[in-house]
Amino acid sequence: MKINELNPKQKITIISLGFIFIILFISLFFFIKPANKYGADIGINNYDKYISNLPADRRDSLNSSLYNLVKYNSKSGKSNINDATVRGDSVEYNYNKTTNINSGSFIVDIPSIKQSYLLSYRWSSDNSNVNLGGYTATAACVPSKKLIYSNFDCKDSFANSPDITSSDPILSHLPYSTFNYTVTGKYNDNNKLDLNVNIILYSSDTRDGQRDNSISKYKSQVIDWIKSINLNPDNYLINYIIHG
Image (cartoon, rainbow, N blue to C red; front, side, top):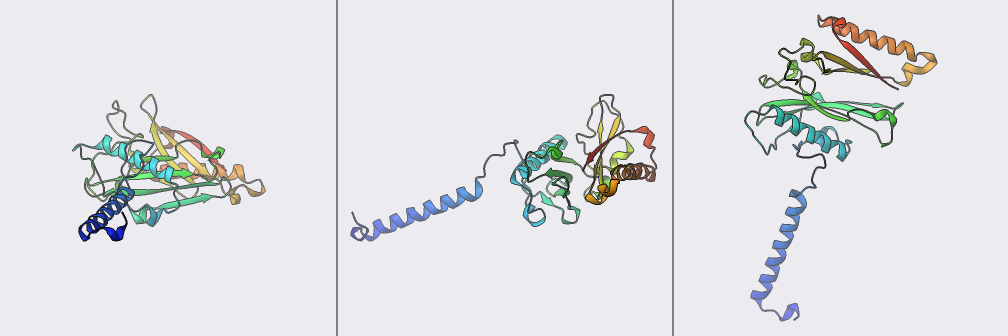
């Protein structure tokens, strides 16, 4: 039967079905997203506004890390969070031309549960890049001085051992980052806090045989920073990881 042989009622029925099919297709396209291979996640609404070059795989990993940390710190059991957003003035980004490593961090605010978290990432256009080892997408608690909501006694992988009765005071200052190094902390098997320092060397740090001097300079700066917050560097085992 040809379309021009249909009566008006049949034509309206076919057109209506067509519209319904189109609406269903569009709905499926926009609202059903591929499953995150890293597990359950919390989507972050404004990635593209601030971090448009972040690969999809790294986004998925960060979203899953955020979900796991929110769940770990959740007391209300709230689920289906859909208001997580990047705090614009917290975004930091760096590209190391020598190692071909992109790295950065940003704070995510979640108004519905009045919590914030610090997300950090590293990635390279070369998936076999030997400089990319270690954690490439992590979620952590925000230093207290950067909280915009009340303190909710956040715990993360750097300080969540049940055997620890008091937090080390340096945790309120971590992670600490400069253009050339990042300081993070993690409790060891003896419930003592170790510091991990990732030092990033640029071509200006390594030319003319200055590599060792540059490393020594940044190590000294880390020690000076610890002293500047009235803490004793000798109380920590400091692990230095050199990139570049």
